[in-house]
Length: 100
Image (cartoon, rainbow, N blue to C red; front, top):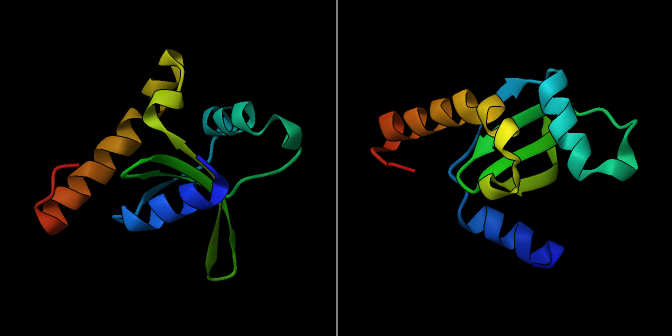
């Protein structure tokens, strides 16, 4: 998909997100998809209905830098994100009665 198509798809299917404090495991997953920006820091990782996103908080704005789908993760990375995805799904079920 083109970048514009990915962004459009994201906002058409957005149910919000569940963020987590970035640790070395999350940071390493981000860098495997953004190898050209190894020195770039991220402020948050979040589970979204389409997978996960990585971004930076600037003041009151969250800037999403990378969006990945669940199937883009390697098997050993899935466990890192499992708890975050569960918390996201549980919150949407509680708030909206939606199973994602």
